[in-house]
Image 1 (cartoon, rainbow, N blue to C red):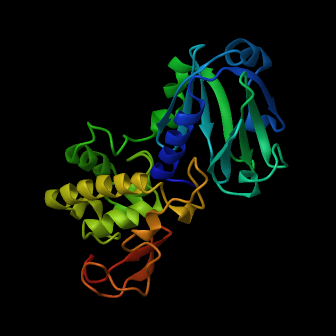
Image 2 (image 1 turned 135 degrees about the vertical axis):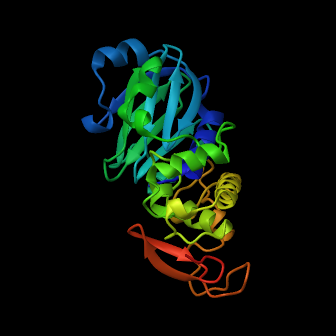
Length: 289
C-alpha cells in the first residue's frame, strides 16, 4: 500500500489537472469500487465542479461545488489516469493503462468532464473505492476517526508525537510507527528510514526512549517525508507521479533495501532483519537496542 509521500504525489498531480473541471457523466463496472446511490450521483456529482483535491493520511479527497466530496482510497493497485486533449497523465500503480487505450479491463470508474477530458480509476485487484459523501460528514468516517495526526502538520510537535507513541509504550517503536492510529501515513519504508536517521533500533521499546530520542525521531520523520515528497515518492511501491514517472526517493534511501551495502554514516554493513512482522533494514552499529 502506498505511504504518505506517494499519495501526496498523486494529490499534487491531480490538483494541477482536474481542479475547476465540471463533471458530465460517470460510469462504473464494479459496485464495490463505486458504492453510491444513483440519486446521490445524479444530484451531487453530475454537473458539479471540482473545487480542490486534498489528502488525509493515505486517502484522497476531491471536494465538489455541491458540498459533497469524492473519497478515494487507492489501496494496493489503484491508479488514477487523466486524459484530455494533447495531455495524458497517470498517477498510482503503473500498468499498461498509462500508455494503452482506456477504459480497459482494470477500469472500475470513469469520470467524464464537460470539456471532453476523462479521469479513469483503474484497480486490478478491486480493493480500492470511490465514495460520494457530504463534505461535512467525510471526517466522521470510521477510518478518519481512528487515524492519527498528520506528521507534516504544523501542530505535529515532538511532544504530541511522544504522547501518541506512548499509547503503545509496551511495544517496539517500529510497530508503534506502523500503527496508523498513532501517526498517519508512515509505512515500512519511511519507518526504517526515520529510525535510522534517529539512530534508534526498531526493536527498542517505546517506553525506553528518552526525550532526546523522541526529538531526533520527530525531526527525522519530517525530514525524510519531505525529501520523499520532493522526489515524487518511492518506486519501491511501484507508484508513479502525475507525469507517469516513478518516484526517485529510493535513490536517496539510507537503509531500506540496502542490505549488504555500507551504512552511509558509519560504513558498517546494513542488514535486513524482521521487526513487527515486517522486513526491517538497520545499521547494526548506528542502531543498537
